[in-house]
Image: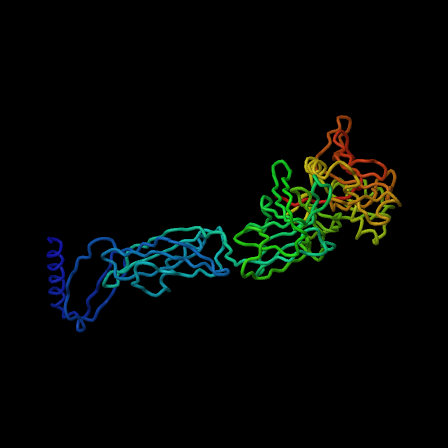
Length: 476
């Protein structure tokens, strides 16, 4: 109260002192240096008021829902007793320094309680800032208040869906089930080891489009398929149904019984599309156990960044031997072999395997090859193509796993191109440490026309001057 009367006296004294020279302007200087000038002729009276308490508006997030790419943020807004209105804005945390400027462009609201705001093109997993600034009854701003939230992952709300079982898997062993542009399920024609044959299995997918392997249903007989991903084993419970032409996705589960209403889905080949600059290669995918493999040999002539991998012909032996950055060779220098054999890559490509494999995929280690052999069985015939002339006549396999190995041979400086029709060699990324040699080498895998089993070379390796085929496995 003392301060109030002191301020009245000060103003009165100031006006009185200016009156001696007949002032016509009232000058108000704020503590921050801002100056406001009034025409005394326009001033009716001077008065003072006391605003008690903070002038703030607080926002508390109740829920966030997705509407396509936009986020609908439901909040509860509370204002302090001294606040009469507020401005509010939501920004990505990376733009928080611009909050004051963004608030100045917003309209003032006095709505308290539940408030909804739409954030356009909200990014799942990104942090956002809610900034508010409140005003008292005179329009004077209080302090800016901020709070943060993390945009949730998108949850997909969908009706019951019908899934038509493909009648052919010639274009790919794995088929994706799409609804409104989102992958919701997967249909695989895959090898079931206990039965030594293939079954068609349908899996629901999680929000990232990956099959939930513990919820499989066999379209071959209506049985259940539950995979142990850690041990790469399966529990297959026989069903009593004839082969199914339709199954349904209801509340995240694959069911056989038709619901009252179900919307159709699109079932299409789930192909690996590998774009590298101007080059595009498309590969079939096969699921074997809990692993997803390319069902074809790699045939990329560029690294993943789009730069060219050096290529050498069979006559360029010295250039091939001198290469230590990665190179490839086309068998017999004949491009007609590329669609079925792929490329033969030297070991230095395996040194740079992260630049060789398609995005989301990798060149397998010896342990990953071992898991394939353990589940698919050791028999080479299980993996070898059953296509005529894929091997020397009469040496084709059953291809019951869908791995589809062709006898693409190898390239080495000593032999040149060799063993097409008789051998298939694949690199692993597991190094072989030869105590007698300083030349880097890698362990490898071999399929031979006469050998009964897939052979894993773990106690020897080929030097990087060999040219072998490459298969890639999907990262988990």
